[in-house]
Amino acid sequence: MTAIYKMEKNPPKKGSSKKVVLHPRIIPWNTLNTEALISEGSKRSTYTGGDLKGAVRLIADMLAEKLNDGYNVYLDGIGYFSVSLHSRPVEDKKELRSESVHFKNVNFRCCAQLKKRLKNIPLERYKEPKKNDFSQEEKERRLLWYLGRHAYITTVGYQGLNGCTQYMARKELKQFVTDGLLIEDGTKRMCIYSKRQEPVELPDNFVGNSNAGKV
Image (cartoon, rainbow, N blue to C red; front, top):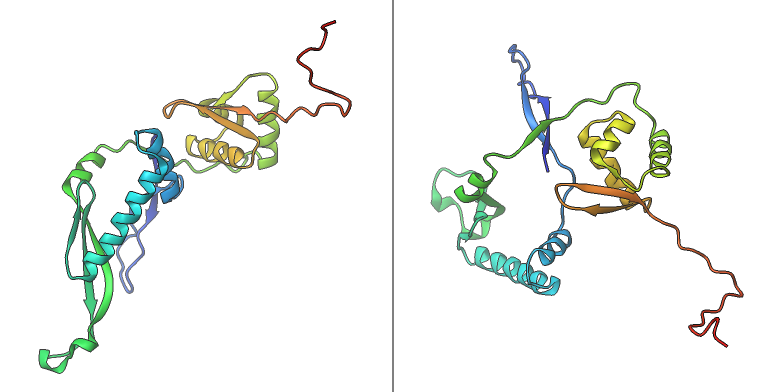
């Protein structure tokens, strides 16, 4: 999957006469929680969801415990965790007692291994939607029209159908899945979306009989 970025203005410094410059910023598809990662992880390994959930909880508990004891913690492939402190400003260390020093924050420093894995991240610039974009209701109507004539639709197909960017196509298709209109299938590199079929209601007088038709 390609990451989407957007160029945004740097906040101007007070009293500065310099020109406003732009910087790139990732537009996240979503925020994945622990449950989502565990669900995907269990499909990609021999570990059960319960095994992974227990392991995550154990690591989180131990991380908090060791930081509380004054250790720095390094998680292989992730990075370093440490605690920072704060106190009132003093000129002589004797002016401050331990009771006046408090926890401030948990610092995280990414390890070189993770940085290397993200070095060649595939990027695509976000394209601002046109003013004459279809309304959400019109997009849904066009989608249902298309699926009435085809078995499924792809992200590229949705882009062409509704004249939107790849980012918006993926986002809107995911929302249609969440709303129960579509079913997502295919592979990670090639997702396809089909219309969710309504359950067939059988007549009240219908009786299932495996011996039906036999004398």
